[in-house]
Length: 200
Image 1 (cartoon, helix red, strand yellow):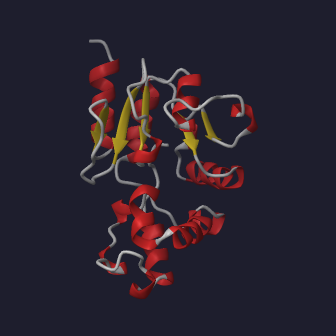
Image 2 (cartoon, helix red, strand yellow):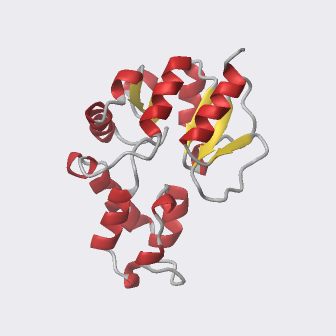
């Protein structure tokens, strides 16, 4: 999944629905949670599984999606990537949540730059196997992707995948394997693609 939408909606939900007493990590407060800490891998240890799942149900609902703003540079980044090759969005969300994501992408002018937006639960990918324990990576390989970008470590392959460069997106310091490239922002993603896929 490429991160196009901002985490302001998550940030707002956390502040409106949780108190410091609800936080699982007692060394943290609701106010200490940064917008870039909103991936499942980072957020569940802080707020707990139940609160995370409740937040996801809202954020990926149409009402939640309508509140989400774009990540800086995302539209330009997707446009530039689309000029270099096919761009797919693969979401680990259920089909209805993915439909809401598709509508958000259309509303914010991303969709016209994409080949497809799919869910890992989409029946057309039912026979696609996980690669390195990741259904998203498996779908990427199935689609012939050369570059896979995601903001959550749990979707990154544990080992290198032949012919697929994997970029972990976001400003956090990451403990990524040597085969994972860390892209702090959209400029890093586009720069990597230009260096590695555009022949001069």
